[in-house]
Length: 536
Image 1 (cartoon, helix red, strand yellow):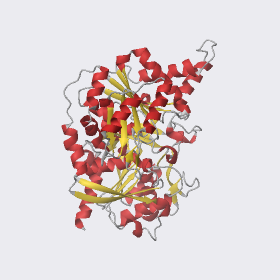
Image 2 (cartoon, rainbow, N blue to C red):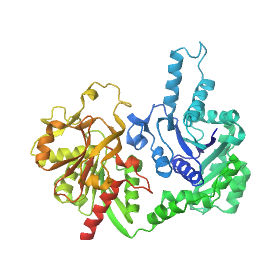
Image 3 (cartoon, one colour):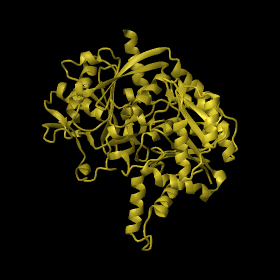
Image 4 (cartoon, rainbow, N blue to C red):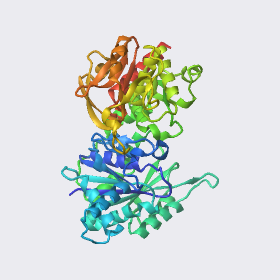
């Protein structure tokens, strides 16, 4: 049976429970443990697939096609943990399962209640994530903060879980904020005391407290937290602000977190080895020798988490190229062909990410035009590819009015359109082309040179596809079909003749990029931007 670590948060949200969970996973992996990490979200949506990025940030897609919380992206970037549909659980998913069982009569006429039926289903989900696998430690992150009404069934379930599997098999870690009051020049521990007090009212006594702070914890503050929160002094661990999130495992190790976790869970591990992580990831990230500016052109630019995996994949490519990647966020809603130079003249690469809906589309098409005509390295992803195809159809193939049927159902030239099976779909959740699909690359294409192999597998999240009726005219005018999902003839990658670096993919390569193994397309994109930068 695996050991279990439950991570809760207090005081405020967005403290970085996902980073903390991933970093603990990285620490344990560095000592020979096999881990998996699971996220519990208290909202009633079955998954975040139908939610706006403004509500939830990006939707991260797993290899098996689950639409999940963005924290699962951190889990995959930091660890080798196998992430799939069982690693993401929501209140909606739990309640839906219980209601379906009730409708089938599985509760034998009994009254269905939060306790025990909902909590039992949560506990079943906790165990399900490691079933059939050799997992040493399961790390479970509980979304939201202590005190949220919707999170109470999850907290009750993890309270019961220790009784079910034994005290030595469960560890509770609480991540909390230690605010610094500038006027008083003092760190305040009272919010943490109240947060832990609330957790203890529920019946959970944290074993370890991670203290998010912008200032170093004094011995006095540490002693006060230990006394009032009833935890060992060495179990009060500092979690300071860092320049790169990839430093966090090293910071936790320095604070002795790994030793406390091993002692409290009675884990037998080998000696930790984070040297490769430090040498290949952290040092290059903090001390690059070059710098390049890349424009990310999208419509959710006001929210950092809307394109989280894109930003991280660009950083990974920077690490691989010994280069700091400065990201210029460009709101596509403000772009016009006549004024675009003002926004993009200072960048050495243009990336258009995925998305949905009409707003900002003409700005993205204008950005694709600018990159194509000015020979600036261009990377289109999902909707970014579709915008590139529309731009090429309009301005090179002279198919005036070319568009996607997503934006204009009566388009004269529907160069992007729905597949037949998508036209029959009524339900929006979980019905897109999701998860990993094969792609066969064209030899001598930029993509083939980047991957260095012919057959690849990449993750998808979209409904609309390249319309093959227009393939002939596109190829005749210089568009290269560089990648195909052969069994169905679906276009996966397009490139451009005579352009130094112009690649657009229907899939989402950012989901498979890691800091110590950057995605090859991102690496080559940044390489192309560096070359342009060196030309001046």
